[in-house]
Length: 437
Ligand SMILES: [Zn+2]
Image: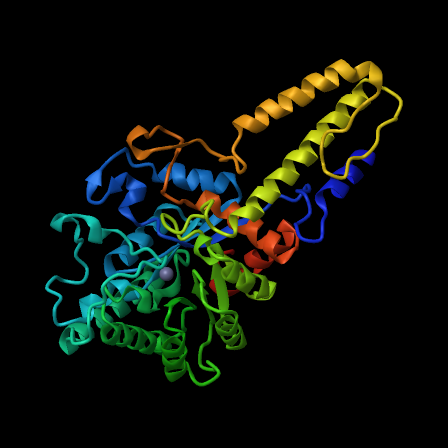
């Protein structure tokens, strides 16, 4: 009892989450681009290492991320996501929609069929667009909508969704999307075409019977985004039957409140922790509206992000708690009389003098280890893609097992336990997407 009390005392503070308890976390990654060829070892159209998708899914399950909602962000990736859902039944689920950055297929300047792989052309377009802000030269309006092409795309998307819903044994397709508006990246698709793509897909989503929940993307476009949603589903979104999530949220607190007031959920990933302002917004998300995601292979949490410091804090406390517990266990094993004093800083406590030499040796070992270990250790070995090896993560390729970092940072920012964060996000996700039988 004394040991666990000390562990709690070391872990609890007013700004940081409690130290890890016996709770086993469970996660659902609501936004993971597993259909991206990068998870098959293909980078920019070139094969760099063996297909390690099984390993990626295995690592996710190992950390407790037992459900993955794979994002469909183009016609082809929606079909590929559905195939993955069939390959990993009960673990992988899929969405179907056309991302704003993939919406140039609606325009007069597009010359390929919308379900073609674009990899033969030089590679990069086959990858899913990153959801992190990446401003560049915008395409000016004038790259207009091709009405005949648009009708065909929407009809084909409707067909894809209908087939997925009627032919599947289990409900693999769980959401409509990813779709929305992204005014940070008008270089992929003009504003006019993005708005057309969003509206046309919203009309289709509203016409489905029964409807699907929505998986939405909104970046630097809040006013138009809300306006188009209301056009399709009513001023209070009263005709939106299954709700939806605005993923990869990086907007303001006011924008977030408006979305929550409309009954929508907020998806958080590494992009949501970049600045102190971002973290301030995350603090305001109601747990009853929270969902967690990695948006891999993009949006990893980086040391330069404001949110990183919550991870450092978490790891320091976990380490101190583990060291204190080990020390106490040793003392108990030696059956020495209890003559120790607590240490509020979480450092290893000093035992009686007769154990002085051993204690000093351990302290030196701890210091040595501290030098070696990074502030936030990798749970799995991580290597450069050029040095790929079986079982290792690839540096710079975010994957769903890192979702535990997202949950720890949210817990740190909000000053609540990891359990509260995980259980709230799990319940919200199951409620909206129905991913649990
Ligand atoms: Zn997105």
